Picture 1: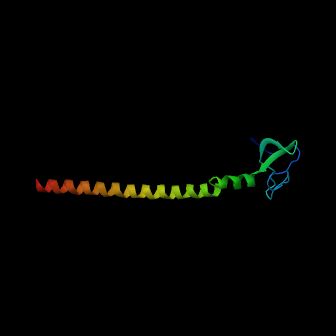
Picture 2 (picture 1 turned 180 degrees about the horizontal axis):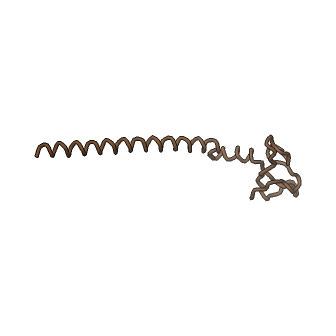
Length: 107
């Protein structure tokens, strides 16, 4: 099983939807998954990227848009964490300085 940019063996169509080597709306043709199996006495088996993504979804694969959404959420949470840690450090420094001043007054 491997990826190919263009289906070269006959028939050059997706096993599921029947899509051929025609460009999509962006002008891209592939990639296709070549299953390296033959059916019907020598017909090749290819699966287009859209159908492979649908198959992956059945098995719990995360889509690319979900991954980018998660990356942006992680970045936002990391910034929030950094801000809170900075605020805590500032509070700790002030508390230490006040404690030191109070101890010096008491002595």
